[in-house]
Image (tube, one colour):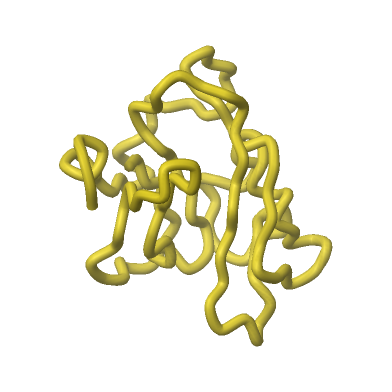
Length: 130
């Protein structure tokens, strides 16, 4: 992990985030507007599901409206594009199926890792704030 984002990276469980309503528009929050992936399970699990506010979280499990890589994708990845922004203070990742699968977050424009996982986490829906 690099820089101040990495030094403050922390994983939150849903019961810790009841005060955070991701459905309420907030001018400080920018959701992804573009997505592409190494593969997609089907059109119900397309990369584009990662754009905009979460539609499944805080529910957990295998739900349509989320991105899921194809079964035979040995090294799945998801690339997201955001509107032009000033410097980000945090990155929110909602994992509803296979929590702990986020192993790296990179700023591709600067070619720097913002987050690198040390180990897979427990099961259950998670919302990560990096």
